[in-house]
Length: 208
Image (cartoon, rainbow, N blue to C red):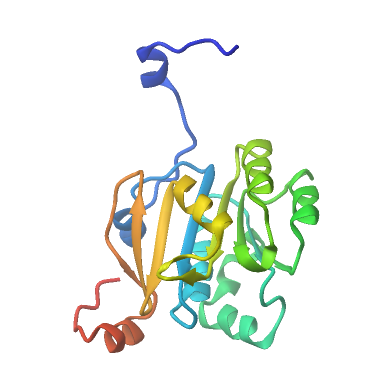
């Protein structure tokens, strides 16, 4: 049985907090670098672009791996990488070409393993919720970001819905705009593309 904690124990506990700034602070507050985040939205609404943009920003706080289980190494991914200038982050970002969850777990056990892992997508990874919990429990000092398709405006499938309920940050993508719900504060949307968001929403607001 674990030792019970006093109020002072809880108040004085230290956590690995990412000191977000700018639009990321406005959207998410200052999140802890552990647990999970879910990004979900319909097709061709900007999920992958946002995944890369977020991954690029997160390289300020650790090494990021983007496991593209759905698309893998492809021309469309190459275009996304170029459009978001991923070359600017150098070796702090790595791309995994359809790496299965079992192989990903082995990678994370190695020296200098990535600190932050993006899994794209929940559906194509065929991850079970039991595997999700193993990743979260075995790698407590890592942050996992899951990208999900939607059905009836919710993450598609029982596993994605359980991740949605468990996640510290929820990112709903619609019309090239990301709408956040974060346990750490924030709440301001981010435009993935000002031009395409403006076309979709019919607004002149270019907040980014």
